[in-house]
Image (tube, rainbow, N blue to C red):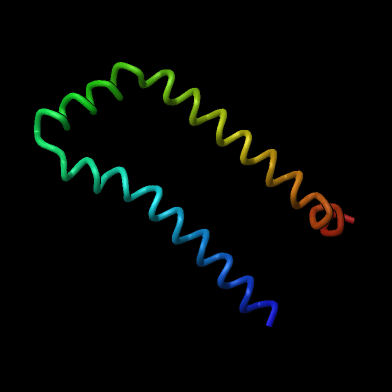
Length: 78
């Protein structure tokens, strides 16, 4: 039964990734043309900060994943 739980866990990750990726695009599509232009202009103006924050989040998530799976990693490489 462990493999079924792992499959459901992986499906949950896949589902939340899809929601996180698609929901902002869906919201943007419902906005008026003027609001879309304003939002995309703000993203373009602040692109450097957005990229820096996104990069720090990716590094943080990677470090957390490394810490959370350290036992498995050490078993694999020993």
